[in-house]
Length: 450
Image (cartoon, rainbow, N blue to C red; front, side, top):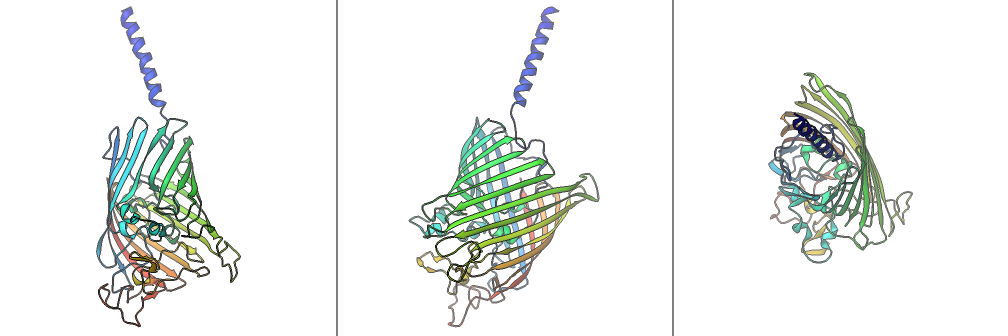
């Protein structure tokens, strides 16, 4: 009996130490429900998960109708959409995260129209040899690194990783709205370089970046881009974050410096998940300020010789969930002003001012949209949508979007390609892209994730 008692005591003590060892692993934001947040994974668990690997499959299919009805079906000024009045596979993503004794890596492949639509304004691919936009086109994320068990974790990663600037996620299945507001759609979706994430406490993340540039595969000049993110969640109902960036992102203009600050707050102000009426409600607000200075421009208070070149924008969204979070409705919008148009998504087709891939000394379009110092661009938008989410892996969404600009910008009925809408049609001498100041559209989207 004494030996049995001794054995039981030994096993109890060993079990206690085992429990202590298991609880010694500190996980940032553990126990906090973040599935409600705009720009975050809305699932409570992953199906494709084991000890070393968490897989992910995402499919984003949509049909969008522009009431302008452009004859070439081209969508202008969007990184989410590419074609009007057609069923489109915007994005098909396949990949996952790997972890083994501190070594970590992630790869997400991307196929569909977004592999061509993004990036848009990356002049760095014309510097030197090799077609970087084609090399990286089918990757949305790909990095490797190491996790250090210090505080609540330190991650050091190198490769291509997501940007947090603009609040929205690159993956539409994580966002409250489909067509992002100007604030988000005109800021970067990815960075290429080095990232260090430090979690000093359970509720705080501090992150630093050493990257090639602002959503660019290569470097524009000799200086790399520098930046970072601070995210603080005092509790699961509140999220505060700031992203700040500094770099030289004007091709060939090494003395033109860019600064950008992006700041957001998210608040869940109602939560009754079992309610058959309103089950949850939250809002998000984002404000961005940035500027370029040097080589012929100044940030603010410019003049005719050195025009102002800055970015001011904001967006606000409110989302309400119903019937145990099976249905949801979002309403919101935003405003942007960007003199110099240095972050404006350029119109596509023959309104594009990007270099011709066959001759980078010429523009690809016959009537390029100007982006000179002093050229003004102001835009505002609003949208509302309704979601049906029968389970956490599927969302059916219908959305109405209204967008306006102070200059002709969106595709009108004549399109931006040719009189017939086909690239094979010769262009008459008096033809030009049909750009208008306003558009209304309906979006029908099916978003899948496991």
